[in-house]
Image (tube, rainbow, N blue to C red; front, side, top):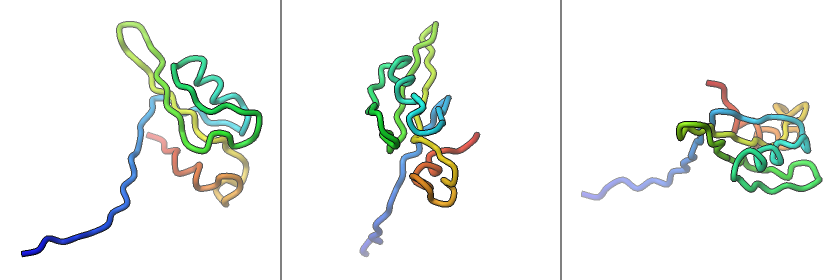
Length: 94
C-alpha cells in the first residue's frame, strides 16, 4: 500500500548554559564576541541581533560553557512590541 505523506514544520531548539538577555544595544553581542570565538553581527542600532547567537567559553580541563546572545528585550514584548513573540519564543527557563 501507499504510505502517508505529510508536510511538517520542525524547529530545532538549542540549549545554552547561559542566556544573555538585556535591552537593545546593551552590549550583549559585543560581550559574546569578546569571551567566545563567536562573531555575531554588531552595529549601533536597535535589534541588530534578530536571531540568538551561540558561543562557547573555554574552561579549564577541556570543559566549556555555552553562551547565547538573545535579541534585545523591551517593555511590552509580550504584547508584540519590538520583536515581541519573535524574541520571547527563544527564552525558556529550566
